[in-house]
Image 1 (cartoon, rainbow, N blue to C red):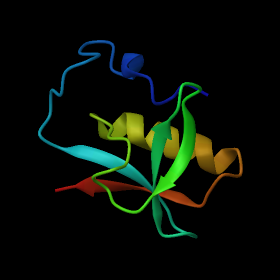
Image 2: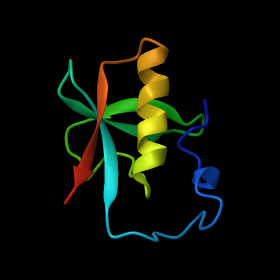
Image 3: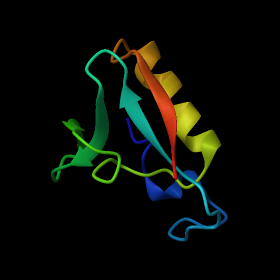
Length: 81
């Protein structure tokens, strides 16, 4: 699963093109999800500031849907202010 890769936004792969950022929150545990380690595994973190940030709402939704489909949820997308 590489849905968190920078290439998810092919027009601007490494740039933040929007003021908004989105993170994924695990609703059952109340924790946010981060990508960590050399193998890029998912781990729980306590705050949205520590979580993996998506630059587009669409990419965050795709990732959340995939996690829910794989039984890793329930997760939802949260807009970071």
